[in-house]
Amino acid sequence: MSLNLDQKKAVVAEVTEVAASAYSAVAAEYRGLSVEQMTDLRAKARNAGVYMRVVKNSLARRAFEGTDFACMNDGLIGPLLLAFSQEDPGSAARVVKDFAKENDRLVVKMVSISGQVYAATEIDRVASLPTRDEAIALLMAVMKAPVEKFVRTLNEVPGKLVRTVAAVRDSKEAA
Image (cartoon, rainbow, N blue to C red; front, side):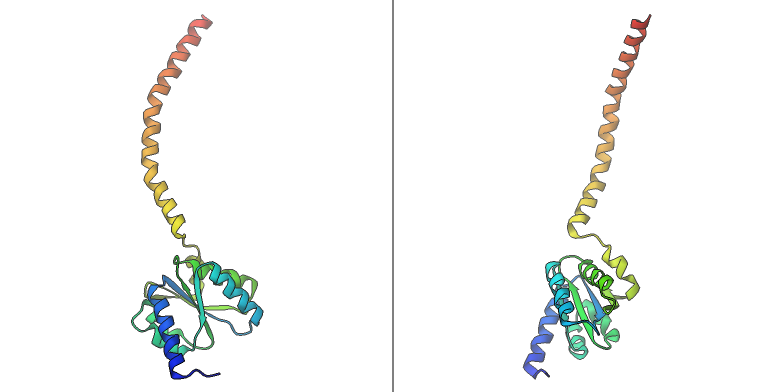
């Protein structure tokens, strides 16, 4: 069923709003997936904080104008599913990659981050990006390491003194 002009404007406005705040986007061809499979994919995306929508390519081109995802316009060919990461850059790629493992009918066409389009083969690299919590944990570990090493070094001086005194005591007791 075709959309009237007001419905098309609403779709473009919704996708533009999501694209303006998204970290990354994945476009995948969904041809051959059943309704049950698409429903399952949408549920997994919702749980992961990923906005997923099937949009006509002409409407997607209009929605991407003025966003970081305008670079995807040339690759919008055929029936595509658009997934936008709302929480962290790798979430959409993780959802699509995991679902594509189970369903070979879902074929990734392109990935976009920060105004650059990457080939479909780069989805593994994007999916392996850390979440916000993982990135903070890594940063804290890096910041904490020098202090820990300094404390261990300072603790080694009295430890060595104790071991030396114990060795002198043991040698006097043995004599």
